[in-house]
Image 1 (tube, rainbow over the protein chains, first blue to last red):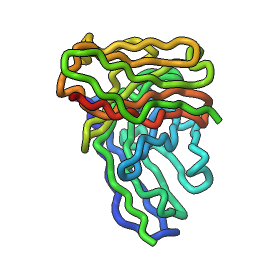
Image 2 (cartoon, each protein chain N blue to C red):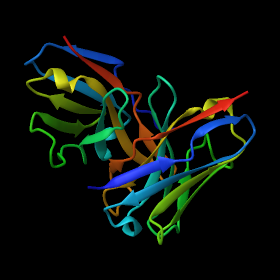
Image 3 (cartoon, rainbow over the protein chains, first blue to last red):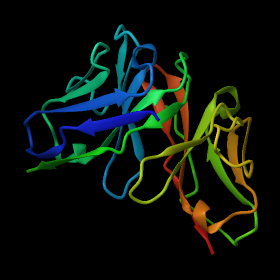
Length: 121
Length: 107
């Protein structure tokens, strides 16, 4: 059973930093692209970032570009999201999700249960 | 930038057919994926590449994509289908877009 388990969420002051982790198990983490998707309270899904299976390419939503950094450690089957200069509007549940194929158009086949980030002013 | 438009809500009686649309400029040229999200849970993929169903998803779920509208159809709707549904496309490297979501209510 594929498992993605996020951690690292919590309450943080505006302007500070936080690093999220996503530990993967029961699938070949190193051959799939990985995404972060967030959901503000009561709102819809917002794609945040993607990293290629080998870490060679990374792309970000405009709303987080320059502030967030996605990375991965394939030896540990772990995905990361470094979030700097946090703003109130970054408050959300953050999900990690795996691509289900090797194509950039592949759907997000597996999702973690999410970790809540609350940015206080 | 590219925009995906979904109706905020759709209501349907049990046993009937629900149709949830996702509008976008020439969306028929893109691959559309659909996710179901129940309250307090993570999203689940229900349709991918316009019309394919992952294993474990009932045949009652189907999808179609043409021109400017993609449609998720749920036949013989059950109470357990009540959820939020999101369409998603890849538009460009920095645009893995989600629609705004549609809340399906089973009457």
